[in-house]
Length: 493
Image 1 (cartoon, rainbow, N blue to C red):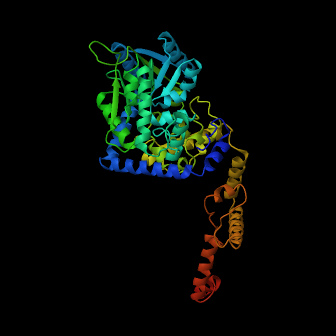
Image 2: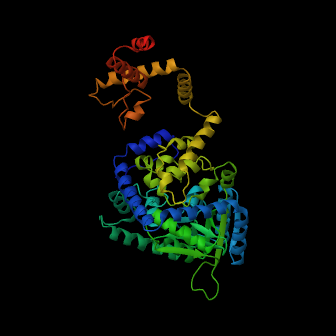
Image 3: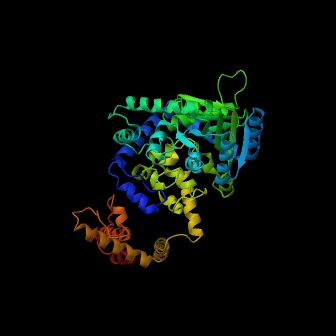
């Protein structure tokens, strides 16, 4: 049987424990993220990766400096192209707008392209409650929808599932004959989804980036599902976070290059779908109605509160693939549509309803691997530290943390207390190694959390000051006496 789905509304500690108790998860994540990281490195080394990152960052910084003007330019060009633009402040207004569009068009079935923004507002559940059949059109999203679980990665939604799990889900839900052949499994899913595309009334997607200069919504994928979602149904709705802007066509292909290389390790993906407006004569395909919903949902507040750098994210997932925490617990343990280091930053800042969102800034080792992998050079460790500092300033730090830091400060204020603490730590840890064969593999709580996965460092038996004093005494002894005797002889001479 496939492993049980993690309850995203459970407390953070339980979500993490459930992930760690999944005997296959760490291996599955390690293989997949390791492969994706290696592909990303090769793709970035094939070009001047440092230059590309600098150029993309400069472009995204320009977007934030000119955000209102670029949004108005995008709206103006979309309307000129025949699109209908809807500004929404939060998830409630976004849901209301999409449901109204669907009801006016008498929509019965919706196909949805892979989109983290629609996950953010829980669109599938809303549409189904409104009486509309909703089908995920991305192969990975389709499988996890069949199993009743959300995506666990920004790019690879079923990265947490083994091939055996996927086969079992398809056998149960799609009556597939037993097989582990990926080609057979993919062919079956595509045949099922083709019928859904042909009978759907409305397509919904997110937006990889939008070109303000031309009023164009762009979505990137490898299996063609996004293109079919945008062109086959008679109504097409694109839900766009208002940060997903690029100023010009040249900027669009700059970000496209960085996204492809960082997300999938490709020079280009198989498909880049670009939609500017509804179908016009003599167009062979395209929607009769094209709606673009511009969603804020806390993004402008992020900029106002000093976290605008996180809005530069292009959702490539590179930081997830190198994060040691994500590779241990996977995406569902975060309880948010956005996982990994970037999710630990933005989930507490957006009104996502995440249980224990304040715990997520601590789901990081601060090793800096995420910053090194980010194609926009976002300083994720600094943002995580800023969030932690905000919590402390708001008085939300735990009693243990406050007590530990107070004890540390008081110890560092006194040389005597500092030296005594060092002697106690050295004596205690060295004594414990006598019972553990030389390696300190267990410590009592709360330090047991450290030794569950690594050895605890053993403190030196003697401090540097003590070793230095002993060294000086030996040197003076070799020279002919104690320091006092040497000084006395010098005075007589």
